[in-house]
Image (cartoon, rainbow, N blue to C red; front, side):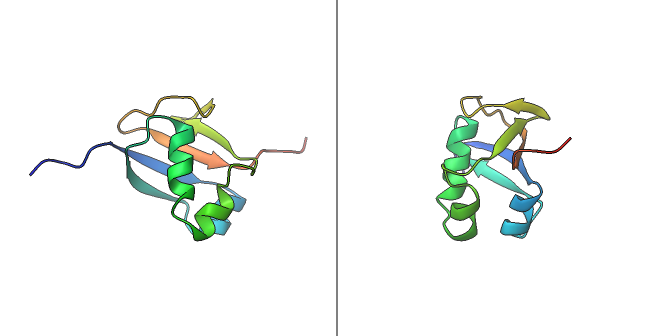
Length: 89
């Protein structure tokens, strides 16, 4: 039997996103090609995911601990982090 299409990534959630989703992270098998598509796929789960990761919400992302935009390509085994914008001084 063949493995499902897509890549396996580790997704981590920080600060208010972690609180809203009730988890600090998870392993996700996704067919998404980019960070933006992954975010949309997670938001499509509905409930807290739809609320926390909605397109109109200010959410930053990092790929393998480097800040990245929605167009950044996902790679197998990557670590993706989603977090709210950081403010303060």
